[in-house]
Image (cartoon, rainbow, N blue to C red; front, side, top):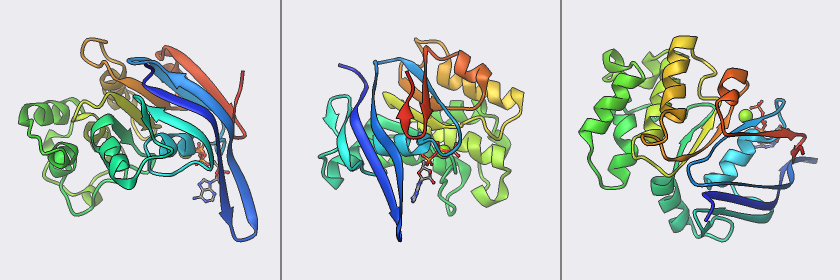
Length: 220
Ligand SMILES: Nc1ncnc2c1ncn2[C@@H]1O[C@H](COP(=O)(O)OP(=O)(O)OP(=O)(O)O)[C@@H](O)[C@H]1O
Ligand SMILES: [Mg+2]
C-alpha cells in the first residue's frame, strides 16, 4: 500500500468574482519510505498540494488516500487523527504556536497523542541547534530558528508521512544540512515517506524522485 495517493485531484479557489484553478487533475503516489521532491514555479500549486494531503484543506474533485485512509471523505474527527498521528507537516509560514515556547511547540504533537518522549525531544532540539533557544517564544526567534523549530515539531512523533514546504528556505548551508539530514538521513533512522517542496537543487537531488509541477498540473 502506498503512503500517499492522489487521484485526479482538482482544487479551485474562489475570491469574489475571480476563480483560480490551483490544481487541475493532479495524480501521483508516494511509496512507503520514498522521498519525493515537489518542484515548480511560484504559484503552481505546491503548498495547495501539501495542504490537501495533510487535511488542512479539502479538494473539490478526485480522491486522496494517506496510508489507506480516505482523506476526501473523512470526518473532521478522522482528519484530526490523521494530522496527529500519520502526518508531520512543516508549513511554509511555520505556524508555530505563539504562546508556547520552542520546547513546548516541539512537544505538542506528542502531547496531543497522549505520549511523552523527552529523549526524542532533546535529541531533535540538539540536532536543529536550538538548545539555547528552547525556552524562548517564537516571536523572539529569527526566521531560520522558527523554521528549525517547525521541522523538529513535524518529526518529533515519528510520523510515517512527512510533508515539508521549503524547510530550508531560511537557512544557511550549515543549518540546511542539519535539516536535510533529518529529512533524508539514513533510511534506518528515517523510514518516513517524505514529500518535500524545495527550490534548492541540492536538496531535490537527494530525493528518490522529483515531481515537476506547472500551472496546477504535474508535468510528465
Ligand atoms: N486561500 C487562497 N485563496 C485564493 N487563491 C489561493 C489561495 N491559496 C492559494 N491560492 C492560489 O492558488 C495558486 C497555487 O498556490 P500555492 O500556494 O499552492 O502555490 P505554490 O506553488 O506553493 O507557490 P510558492 O512557491 O510561491 O509558495 C496560486 O495562484 C495562489 O494565488
Ligand atoms: Mg507555497
